[in-house]
Image 1 (cartoon, helix red, strand yellow):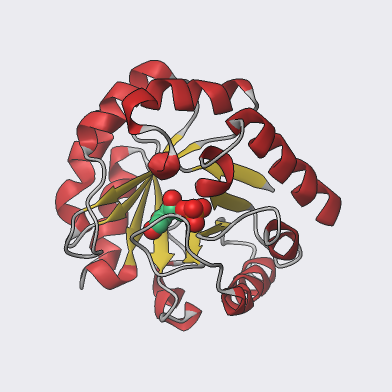
Image 2 (image 1 turned 60 degrees about the horizontal axis):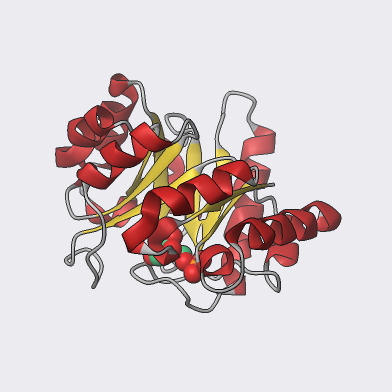
Amino acid sequence: MQIAPSILSADFGHLARAVDAVEKAGADRIHIDVMDGLFVPNLSFGPQIVSVLRQETTLPLEVHLMVQHPEEWVKTFADAGADMLLVHLEATPHIHRALSLIKQTGMEPGVVINPGTSVDAIDMVLPIVKQVLVMTVDPGFGGQEFIPEMLEKTDELATIHDRDESLDFKIEIDGGVNPGTIKLAAKHGVDIAVAGSAVYDGGNPADNLHHLQKLAAEAE
Ligand SMILES: O=C(CO)[C@H](O)[C@H](O)COP(=O)(O)O
């Protein structure tokens, strides 16, 4: 399982340092949460932060758009240097258009579902995406409690993926991933786990990341 550190819980005054710490510690990608204060009740980063971090790291930058009408922002984040762009089904009536636009730019398209959304709802876009992100908290804030029932969805996605050779997506979870929950996730088809507070909120980010990687590997 890959771990994607989320910089939402990093020290905003030293973001480049926060990315550097996990890059040196062997992180696979960096997760950047973009929030518009409308789709979710919080504000965070914009494309400028993605551009700046693009100069600081060679790690893939995975941008999680928690914004209304994400299709309007695809070119902006491609120009900023995002490698993967993840958009919420719930944020647009045009999810197919949004994912197709992302694909056209050369970024990897990913679809995200909130805890209240079922896997059935994304059935028609699974052939386009490279990632399906299952939210394991209601989006908007770091440090929330993991919702274990969401792993029924990762199991379902793993079954769908294994049944159909033409599908080519990774299964990701986001929210409440910590040393206590990562072992459970590793048993439920999860390929990538986003971790914010468990990496950056207390202690040494490199040690925290190594601990999560070790626990995940033991559980697999
Ligand atoms: O999308 C998110 C919240 O909406 C996040 O990626 C968030 O950073 C996860 O934080 P934590 O690992 O502390 O739960």
